[in-house]
Length: 310
Image (cartoon, rainbow, N blue to C red; front, side, top):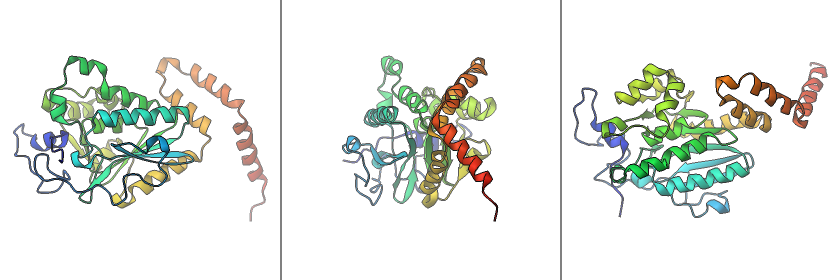
């Protein structure tokens, strides 16, 4: 049976700017399937286990994983509920993180397609969320995994198409890079449901977008379009849906062209509090000054400079 429980995109559609509610409808197709009616079609033409899937991810139910020598592609894949983030998805993301902590690689994180339209993550399954109590909140189900993703050794690239709402948006904020498509809709509709965005948005958004816009999103339910997100620098690029993953790979290629240790240390130092600088920068540079990659890369640069110009 198809799970048709409502998610954050339903709540966002129903909450108008004037505070009134509208009947839930997907006549315009923007939600990629109704919350209480029709069943979305299969997400992608490829099979459940894409080529290059590592053995440790072969039995995943909520994610599709493929790997290359320098990166891991992770696609959220719960099309019937528009990629609502549930415990199974969280557990599988923890498994992904454990692997990337042992074997650091770039991660490209994306969504799936439903009825030919992209969806990153529509938020939480509200029927499940309604039943959660104090102890569930204190366990930090989503906040703990998003924090772990943010702290991965190598950068995370989030490729956003369609809805990225609620927990889906907070997952995106945890990434180091975010790119999107013209169909992107991103926001935090939690307060309309009587809760807060407790998995990172309440503090990450202020850092990413500034206090004024963060409050508009967090307290007034503002949903940003792709162009608005680009203007706010919440995403850095916009690409057509069919070009999104190629653009994410192009960005990953640029990261992979750098020295991996220098990238890892840059990410770690970047996240340090202001009072740690410049001391932490000096210590980090001291480590890199002794690395073989530093000598090899600088010598290669000097050798290229000596080559006669044609």
